[in-house]
Image (tube, rainbow, N blue to C red; front, top):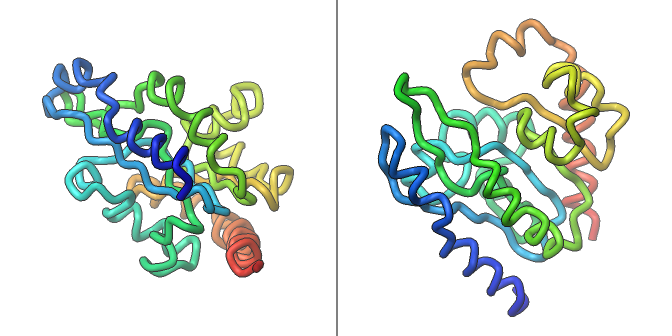
Length: 203
């Protein structure tokens, strides 16, 4: 890593902008930014926000959603967590907490407003971007391009490939979505895996 990237990583790790917001949630937790990348990364996985398990582990996608995502990509844990090649950067670096009904709160917009442009400018080698879920898709593609929702955005993947692939969130809650949209596994994922292999294996 270069010195400037080390400074960026240090600054993200020290961020406490959302401390009052998190303290007011049901979980009343402190910020713990999960920042998983290196300046050499070729692939960006742009997700939503860490969940409670990731908040505890400090490593992204250490949950059932991560298992499904790794299956979609055809990567084992070593390949997935190779931060020299793959940057895993959610729209908010910290677990947002739960609401009064136990549902995940959305990623605070303040995080992306504060950090995202700075972080992306420090990743000059990115060649493939995976947009996981609606929050990442809206930020990277714009609201006009995603106005019809996640399903329509993912279904339009051919217009964005091979540099960008939108994905639904790999949560177990989307198992029904996968059954209703068999084209995702039959057409989208093979093209994504091929693009990913090209980028990772290109010397």
